[in-house]
Amino acid sequence: MSRSTDWKFRQFLQGQRERILALDSEFECAAGADNLDRLFRELGLIRSEMAEAIKTYSDQLTSPQLVDLLSQLNGELDERLSVVIKAFIEGQTRSLTEKAQRDPLTLLFNRAAFDQRLHDEVERARRYGRNLSLILFDIDHFKSDNDRYGDTAGDQVLLQVAKILQASMRKSDSTF
Image (cartoon, rainbow, N blue to C red; front, top):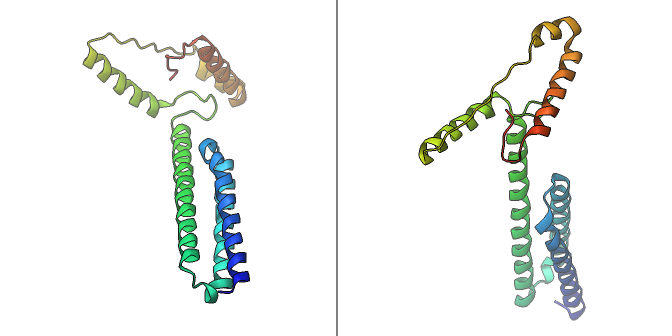
């Protein structure tokens, strides 16, 4: 490899390393799917540019130091990509689990979440020898009012009840 090519390739690799390192602080706080998506795209772009540079310089890459540097840089990039992918998958899983456990209108927990939580709380009460309280209530005449005034009015009643419930609960309480 000529000195000029060696210098250009080394500068390119250093620039890529700086781009990867600049993203490191974002890895720490990239909780949202949009941030993770942007990081993933940026890392993909870096990977693509590195592949293009390797193709350009491949017949001239004979310096073991440059090959080692390139290998190390690819390893760093792979590590960061795996962190982003894992965080994205965990976030998507958490989001889907949360959606599956909540009523789409009121955002209160649904029956499946109630059943699981009740089971867990009964087991906890048994394990620690503690009492357990459960409050169930009914909205008087809801079905007949919903039939008479329509689903939109019924939805408004459910939203108001949900709002009242959430406002009156402690943080340690659950609304099912």
